Image (cartoon, rainbow, N blue to C red; front, side):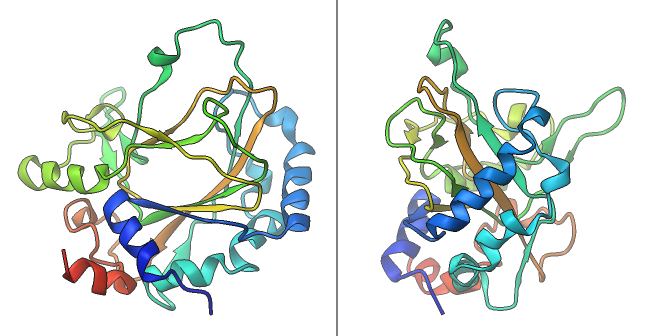
Length: 248
């Protein structure tokens, strides 16, 4: 069974993410990309759209379930404890014409913070982690890169512990000083595994190619539904991380 090694777990603890190269075989990558291309007319914006007819398609979910990806994730969260979302996200980042200010476009978020709308109260629907599978090479900056603000998962936990979590926070981001973002470089077939609470976004794409990625969110069988304890006790359900967590 494939497992994260100690160095990878330490990186995940400190930075909030880890890249595992070549988790998905070449032919499986090609199949996934071709599957998305067959429905590409359904992609209505330039960042990320769920193609609902593909959300449980095995040609995409196989990248998680028929490779080493799932056992790697279990080595962090606990064997038999991981529940993948049934809503696979096909994330395309289309090329930008470069006519607008790049800095104005760079803004991070935490998934699942939903502010109040039309009198309906806001909500926070956290999960545990996210796995991303890259379907083409992203080997330069501003090519639609998965972009992270390293260490913010721990930084935000401290804020939420002191102030509580408010769904009205813009994009879920607390008013704290953020580190410089890192644009992740990756090859087709690589997997990124990241903590739920890590600030992230998709970079502008100034390349000539669409950035293809598939994201699958992870839940944990032991976490009560809609519980917000994971916002402050961020490693509570990461049973495979106990050795690293206990030393910090």
